[in-house]
Image (cartoon, rainbow, N blue to C red):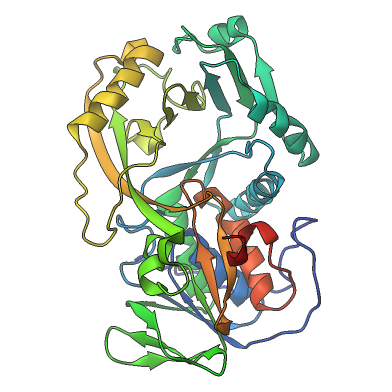
Length: 402
């Protein structure tokens, strides 16, 4: 991992989270924190705890943005349309603010605004209708688009068989791998400690976790611990997580566009979600890697450490069918790259952010369920507030809901 030469220490209080989660005090509960997992959730949590003055050690077995993790890969969509689920709309809206702020702070492009085209082949638009006032309350916008207007604005897209189209103006994509690595680089530059090593929770006695056991045979101790281990949470904390998180195998394909044809790059092409028999989504450009097409349908169970990462012929055929139907000019586009990554799905699709029931100083953060990456900075800000004793646990993310 490349570490920035520039070292800085930022002063001031942590960024306010608006009205999303209420403050319940300002008592500092710990001075030393260990965060296990340097992905989107763990890296941002470590960053915000460090900014708040804590001594933070961040651990990860393969490093930020590695290809096994859900935070790996070039790009991820950021959008705030979640039907009637206000908590996710608010979380995404807060994250969007923080992505923009950190772009300026670090002078790096992390977010590309393209808008999001929501294509529906059924008349049922209850989710979008429920989402529109929630986005408006958050200062964002989701608007219906007529089929004629959609075809005029996006002639590279076929709207045959489409019943409804919506456009989310502030949506776009994030440079996922670069952002995940950058957060850890800045964390180190600001004085945080990072180690590439696997870690497991040690014994729990007296209602507290007493350390983490590292793969090299040593033990690290702290006042509080955050486990943000993505698809590995069910293995690391089986007594609590168990089957509440189910990793699945998800295939992603990158296709080549015609030479000199910019219609399928941003800003001419927005990110898109096509709701037909299955839900496919895509991202234009991807930093030159190709036109991204992925099936959001939950795949088969997957072992994230040793699972085979070779995509299937069936997955490729399904992606090509979507290309031929929705983007006719890409019907015979060459496949440039393909990836397999895990979703770590909870049984209800919501996040898990809560204390371990047997260890009050141990926090469990995960369950991204295929949509978690975008929330990274807002979730890290929230978890840091929980560790500091300044926020309440969001009811929708509590373990007790299961």
